[in-house]
Picture 1 (cartoon, rainbow, N blue to C red):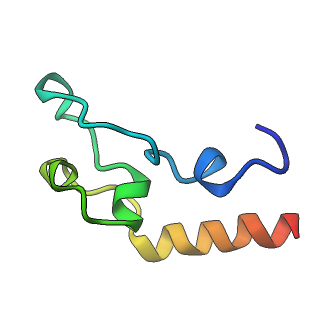
Picture 2 (picture 1 turned 90 degrees about the vertical axis):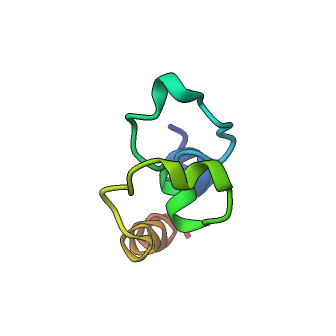
Length: 67
């Protein structure tokens, strides 16, 4: 990944995600949907292993290292 890649491309997966369909519901909620709740279908997935606070800290560190 490029050292200048946006956070949503390098760290917070799920930004451009669409409802993946019933055959893939065993997966976890994306980091994007954990950080930015609101897509109704994302609530059907089990929670991510990271909390929104964990993701925020990771994103802040990612940016700190690059700015």
